Length: 597
Ligand code: AGP
Image (cartoon, rainbow, N blue to C red; front, top):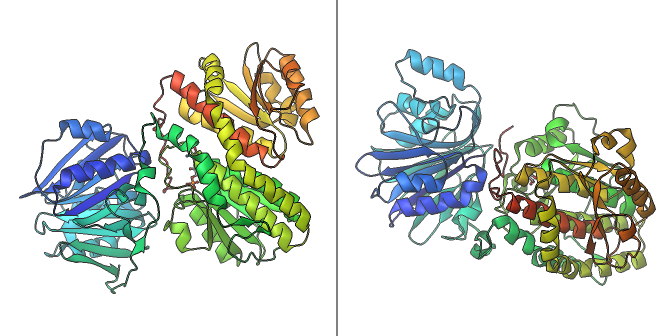
């Protein structure tokens, strides 16, 4: 959802800005631009990628600059609509992530007072407003401009009058400042600046920051000084690099054994599970999330209801917030989000707070918005750059399993013996994921056979149903093959009409209480001509009689097997997209972090 960056320091700004932008490209990649403070504000922007911009921009000298990578909301991808946007004189430049909701009204007034607009964007009102309020001081002009703006923003502004200054501001869009040896950094996301520094300041809503050579000062929008904490990010800078893999997605899939070990570290022991926080004793849980995180939430319902016997509702955040949800004071609302910045998820958790609910976040990115509003359990997946979520999903599943066990023990519905037996199984999870990854060449061969498919179906039952949904989402988002996931028991109620000769159906048929039912469903699709790829346990000697291709996972507890099947489906989608020559890390029209509604 757009990435903004900035640099002020002792090095040339241009290479630093390109480097920062490359690391934020997963937030949007339809156009890019930079502004460097030279004798004037030198702006270059283009439709296309950061590399496209790099290839056309001349070498501009200057140690201060701002940059942007765009995911279009208002106005098509074009160089006119790319950021930075400037005022009428070209001496004030702004990059922005968010949406200015009242831009039409503001734009009308500015046009009436003589301002000339060059783009279709909402953002362009910002430099013109700053120009309108300009009193020789960039910070107070930004402050005044923002007082008339409604909506969300993370912005950085520079002015030719003040070449050694960047003014930044935030409301409902993420913004982090880095304090490095040779300078200061601005970014939408910590992973962009990790290469330069681990010392960061997270901006909070309605704060304005001024970055100058001698330091950073932050005030509220009303000008009241704010004392900010410098936080240290523990992430390894290497983890945000491709490290020899062709795509971030593949690298992130292969990181999963280590990630799961990290997710469990210090949280499981012979005595059970300890997530390091006291969970409230509640009668009902509502999980809210979007996309992949929503699928994790659906899985969470199965495991929490099974282990802790607490009723769980799972809601898509963008629906939940507009349905006047019925929540009882004291219910627990869990928001699951990799980025911690998804606008709908944040709005939904705020809605539940207003109804007096207990809140809990399951989040990956440290310092993200949700961590500032709610107590959180971190998934510890490290920076996830691929737009298609992989390691963040399995680490969410792992946290939900831990949560279910802790709640089950707390409520005494799960015996110590059962909990310990399950913890023993959890400890095998990382090794079992590694064994799935060792079979990647076989999954790749199977994927090659289906790379030309027109559509693909995924089915599973029980806790494998959300995994089927996630398998379908992975395939459609990176390969563009229409894919549908459904509960296998629903076949006869509609999806069966999509089956024709040769259509691939991926059936998750691992051993659990509904295994025989899934075999029955496989027969139903086979009878209508489907080519079935079965995901089955390694000890299953029956499955070959039912399906055309088998991908095996290690024998594992029925609540852990879905995590292993997820890894198979990630690789299956990855290799299909690979054979189709798709831009795997940057699927069309998508951005990783959806910070606007
Ligand atoms: C999945 O591959 C997508 N990137 C997307 O569905 C994502 O899971 C969704 O936008 C939610 O993001 P969040 O976890 O950061 O809130």
